[in-house]
Amino acid sequence: MDAVGKGHRAAIMLTPMTQPDRENAETLSFESAAVHVGNVHMGSRMGTAVRTPIVMANSYELPYDAPSLDWHAPDQFLYQRNTGVNQNGLEKRLAALEGAEECVVFSTGVAAMYAVFFTTLRSGDHCVCTNIGYNALRRILENLLPEKYGIETTFVDTSDLDAVRAAIRPNTKLVHCEVLANPVNRVADIEALAEIAHKAGAVFSVDSTYTPPGWFRPLEHGADLVQHSLTKYINGHGDAMGGAVLGRHELIEPVRIDAQVDMGAALSPFNAWLITRGTVTLPLRLKHIAESTQQVAEFLEAHPKIAHVAFPGLPSHPQHELAARQLDAGFGGTIAFCLNGTQETQNEFVSKLRLITSAVSLGHDESLIVHLSLEDAHAVEFPEIFKTNGILRLSLGLENPNDLIADLAAALTNVG
Ligand SMILES: Cc1ncc(COP(=O)(O)O)c(C=O)c1O
Image (cartoon, rainbow, N blue to C red; front, side):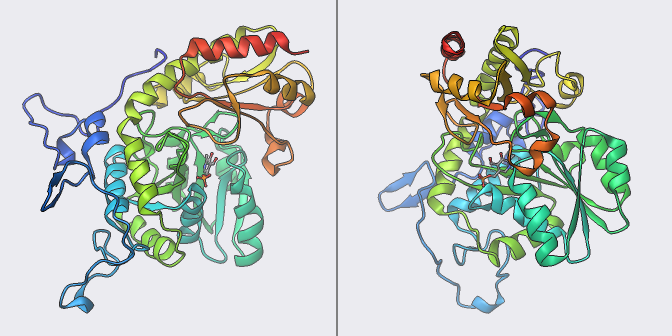
């Protein structure tokens, strides 16, 4: 697989004679779906706008026989906490890109995570979860859910399939992992984990924030639910937060009713509009980022001041073969690495960068680096080198990779 990989797979494979129709997602390739699905051409006395406007309305006019409506239907416009024109358009577009029956959008990625746990687990249930992942996972599953609701979680290394099997209990209702675990880029074998979860009668949910559609589509590999922080690659411009949960209708319906409507973490129309606009360039951005990240990872690995690089596109990554076999294209856009030296060396290095910004988040248009805390609960599971030297997470943006390499090279020269 080259840097970009096997190439972007179409949402639905077209036969050469099929005429693409922007009103019919099934006829559109991945790149065309990212432009058209969910966009509504809206008429007014002034003419028909070709882009969906931002509809900042809390309520929608009800028909004569309002009580007969299905008040929870995904397309029923009543009240903005249920849905609205912009949220609905984004849900349709994300479902087309991810190859999902349905999608629900939320105000943040954490709200989407919480929605998965809240709807699939109840008191007395057990969850098996990756022991390395976005740090809110630990706070929700290790503290909040057991203390308040009596829901227990076993954290396991999801790359060790025997450990996952051993963690399953008769009351295990959910298995949860990240495709590339944040921040160390450990790769989960989605098909193998799906088989274990399904044998146990559990729902298998996957946080695919690191691998948006274009790089990977977990539902095609056996996942039941996919969850995203839209704040990252899918919006891609670092200016709006959002989250999404996608899957089959019977699993998504309770997510919409229990978590979106009744917990209330609804996405604002403005953010839905911004994120929808971001999705238009997702296929192009992912191609660029995959190529840049590969180049930057290779540069870092070859540099004498670098102690370790964790990026699945490098043959040195222990799960390089699995990543190459599993992912549709590319190896992600985020690199974990550290310099020879101490935590202070990592701070000094970050302070010498002039193009790359020191800030949290990832998948933005600008490249971001963060020297992560080792205080978070999952840090005890990090590879030893990161625990001694410190860990830097670099998320590549849309800059020219030669500029990024020049910035990293200069900072490396100026450190120590
Ligand atoms: C893998 C992953 N999942 C979920 C989240 C949470 O998303 P948000 O910050 O949009 O709430 C993040 C945030 O960094 C993340 O990296």
